[in-house]
Image 1 (cartoon, one colour):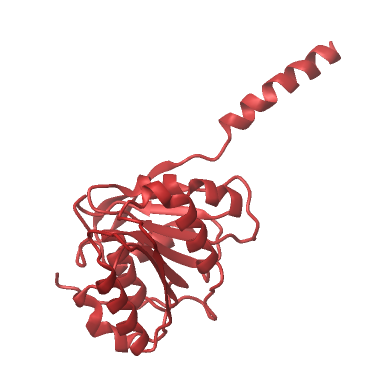
Image 2 (image 1 turned 180 degrees about the vertical axis):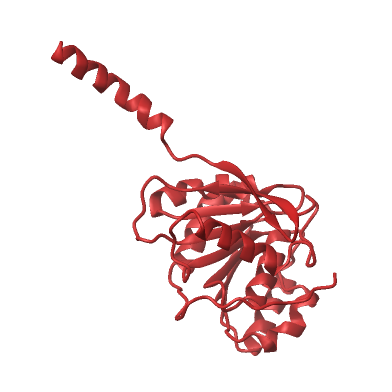
Amino acid sequence: MKRSSALVAMLLAPCLAILHAAKITKETMSSSGKDRSYYLFVPDSVKDNPPPLVILLHGSGRDGRILVEHWESIAKREGIILAGPDATVREGWSNRDDGPLLFRHIVETLRAKLSFDPRRVYLFGHSAGAVHGLGIGILESEYFAAVALHAGSLAPTYSVFIDKAPRKIPIAIWVGTNDQFFPLKAVRGSRDYLNEHGFKVELTEIAGHTHNYYGRSGEINKAAWEFLSRHRLEKDPQYQDYVIQR
């Protein structure tokens, strides 16, 4: 009987592991009086205790799940919590409806139910999410530790805030030399402009690469995480309030 019980336990163990394996879940929260959706991935094990958190900003026409799926493998390997919010509309991010307060609500909602290092909260965005993520990083330079982006540049909306940023948040950009939506000249211009204003922007130009992040997400995410993981806030995060009209 004991042998039979042991055998059953051995056979069930892999099944139970699968049932309890980490998976992407769709969550909801309230932000500015509205229900907002985000996708969450919490790895089974972590290297650092508490672990870091990466907030992922999707491109136009997508939702928050897509980037979480593409970051899932590295999150499992490195022990990273992932959160991918949905923009208000799939076509892109709104400064008013998807502004800094949304991201603060995401972080604080997660802090209420998960343990992670508040000094190691990062932003990563692709395309429209890259543009928005860069802006949010500049606005909330003392709230996020660093920002990385693929295929994006600085939007004029955020230019007026650059000199007001209390911290020159570390920024890294990856862009293809054949990107049809974000020409190399424009991305280099954003890098140079930010560097002239005291930021230290690392730009990686991928030869022959286009706008297609998804075909090369593995190598881009690996490089992005190597950059992000080098940075940590020196003090507890400080959130800056804004009134954004549009």
